[in-house]
Length: 146
Image (cartoon, rainbow, N blue to C red; front, side, top):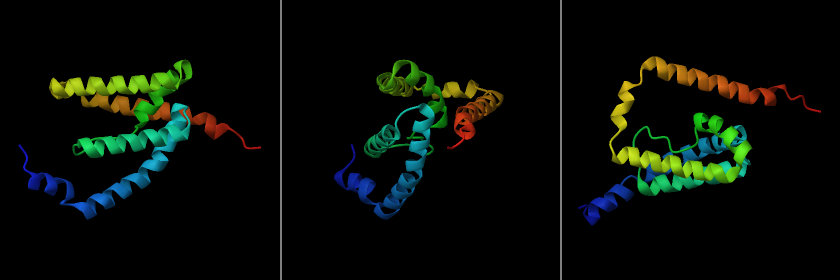
């Protein structure tokens, strides 16, 4: 059981660095949310609202060092087909389902399974992701203005 003083120290003991870190993350998150929402084929406002919601939820529930609590290129590229074929409603349902699966995997302590994924598989995944992002941006690059 956490005492009230320990709880207060945990939440308010590091205010200045926490506020500075929050501002830096917010300034980096705005263009990232807009870019990934464009890649996913949704309105940029949807990306901004989603990023804000994720940040607030993670602020109150806590986090871990190295935890990604924002959109990533991997999810943005994979969601393009889902949004185009089924619409934005399925994107919300998919996101909630993915979160529930992650919570269940965490409760079952399945993190050790990642040890069995080789470095070459991870490198191939990242390289394929870079190619998919590049191909998703080609229409924007080749579109001639006026």
